[in-house]
Each structure stands twice: as C-alpha cells, then as structure tokens.
Length: 59
Image 1 (cartoon, one colour):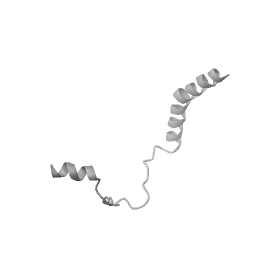
Image 2 (cartoon, one colour):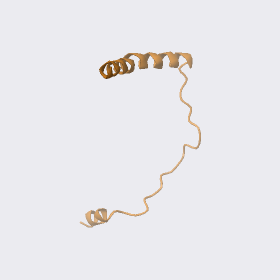
Image 3 (spheres, helix red, strand yellow):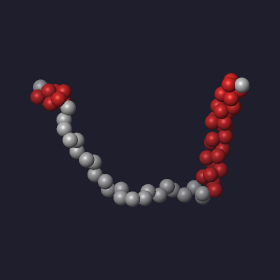
C-alpha cells in the first residue's frame, strides 16, 4: 500500500501538476503578476561585524 501511494504521488506530481498549471494560466488569461506595496525598500545595514571579518580586513 505504501509503495502504491508513492507511485501515485509521483505520477500526480509529474503529470497532473503541469496540466493544472497550464489550465490555470489559460483561465487567468496569462496575466502578468502584480506586485503590491512599496518596491523601493532599501536594505538595512548589519548591526555589527563578525570578529573574523575584522581580522581578515586587517591583513
């Protein structure tokens, strides 16, 4: 029973997942993804530097 389940799940993942993807992309009209929110977020600098980085920088 376990082996049959493993075979079934593998078949589902290999064959049915791409079919569902194509069907859903067709139903949505192949619209591009929309990004919500502020996309101009700047990275936050690190709070401290690791001790080994200071040692390597001094050499």
